[in-house]
Amino acid sequence: MLDTVAVPDRLDATFAALADPTRRAILGRLARGEATVLAIAQPFAMSQPAVSRHLKVLEAAGLVERRVEGNTRPCRIAPAGLKEINRWLAALRTSLEANYRRLDELLAEQTQKEEEQKNDQDDA
Amino acid sequence: MTKMTLETEGDRQVVVTRRFAAPPEAVWNAHTDPNLITRWLLGPDGWSMPVCIVEPHPGGKIRYEWSDGAGNGFYLTGEFVELNRPNRIVHIERMHLPDPTPDNRVETEFRPDDGGTLMVMRMTLPDADTRAAMLGSGMEHGMEASYERLEAMLEPQRA
Image (tube, rainbow over all chains, first blue to last red; front, side):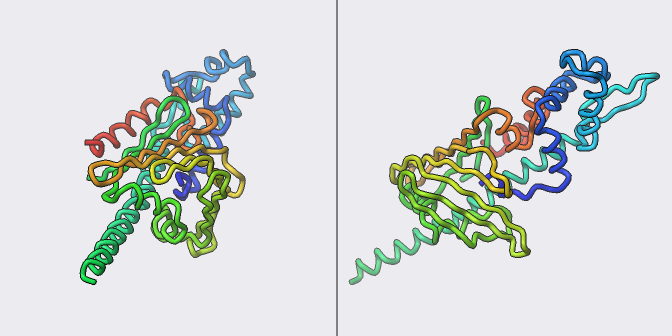
C-alpha cells in the first residue's frame, strides 16, 4: 500500500543510489560533516577511484555536492536531495490519507444504510 | 478528529495509526470485502483497482492490481497468516514493480474506541535497509536531519 505513491523519475536515481550499502555508508560519513575523497575512502579499505565512482553516482542522484578548494574537492550532503526524499514521504502520507478519507466516506455511507434498514424493520 | 500518524519504530518497523467513526466490524469488512476495498484502497487520485482478489482465511491469497487508466499499473500479492475477526489481521505482502519488493509483514489491529475504531497497522520489513528504501531514506545514520523534518511535519497533526 505504501508503494502506491507514484515515484518521480528523479527519485528513481535517488533510490538506485541509496540501494548500495557502501553509498549509504558514505552518506552516513558525510552526515557528520564535509569530507574529502581521501577521508571518505579511509574507513572503507577502498581505493580512491572506487570511492570517486560511488560519489559520482550520489552526485548524479542529487544527494551529494562537491566544491573546489585548492587541490581538493570536499563533498557534502546536498540539502536539495534530502528535500526531494521528504517530498516523497509527504506524498506517501497524502496517498494514505486519501485512502482513509475515502474509507471514512464508505463507512459513513454504510452506517447510514444500516440505520435506514433498522428503521424500516422497526416500522414493519 | 481522525488524524493519521505515520512513524518508524526500531530498525525495521513502520507504524500507521488512524481512527475511524465506525465499529471494528465495519472497518474489518472494508479491509476484507473486494467490493468495498476497490472503493477506497486506491492511492493517489485517478487510480483504480480493476483486479481485487482477497481470500480472508489463513493461507488465503491477496492480489491487488492498480491502474491509472493511461497504461500505467502495478500489482501487489500477499498471503493471510492470521485472522481474528473483527480485531486483527496478519498478512504478508509484496509489491511487483514489476520486480517484487522484499516481503512486508503487516499486522493490522482494529481496536474498539469510543464507538469507533482505532486502527494500528504495524509493518515489519526484513531489515533496516528495506525499510529505508521503502520510506525513501536510505541513510541509517545520515538521515537525522530528514527524520527531524519528518517529525516536525508529523507533529502538528498528532495533537
